[in-house]
Image (cartoon, rainbow, N blue to C red; front, side):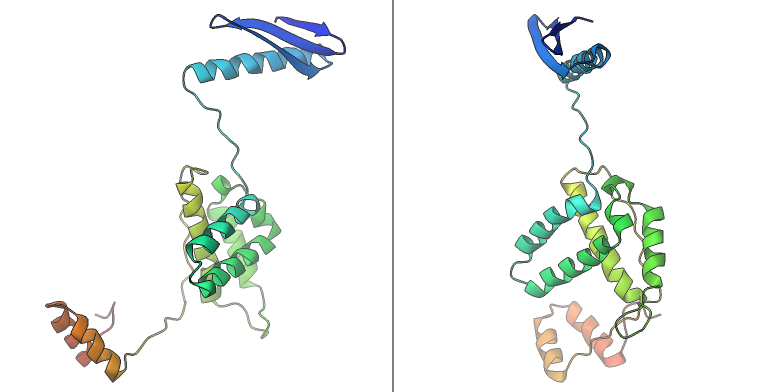
Length: 206
């Protein structure tokens, strides 16, 4: 190890690819200085073969502000959508344990624990939270993780299952809406739509 002391700190000096590397370790302990020099040699060698240092993965709380900014920009014309995501994200972060988990460590275990905690939560109306309410929070978490994957913060997107038992909301077309919808449908979709409307069939019916 080519370390030497100058003043109160140890320095190192070595040659790499014909270049003289001479830097201070900013350490007063010789053993630590030698470890610092070894780490510097490895760093240079990795760069020589195109290996990049893997950056640390942020926690949910650390990544939250970036997600908030993205949603605010992407959904700027839909303030209710922005408010929805920010509210659900705030709820997720209110769980201190989930908020402190690194994004690449969010898998079935922490999500299951979060669901169990939320399932015991009582709403302002003194009712236990419905599966639908919890699913909206899980959907927000899934969207955040997809963004983190697109930005290469995590290497994979974990599978987050939504809760069963959520009540579906049916939307019924008025007569005027039927007319407008059928007029806009090309064939053969118009014929299929007419059958669906006349018979009252729903997606998933059998």
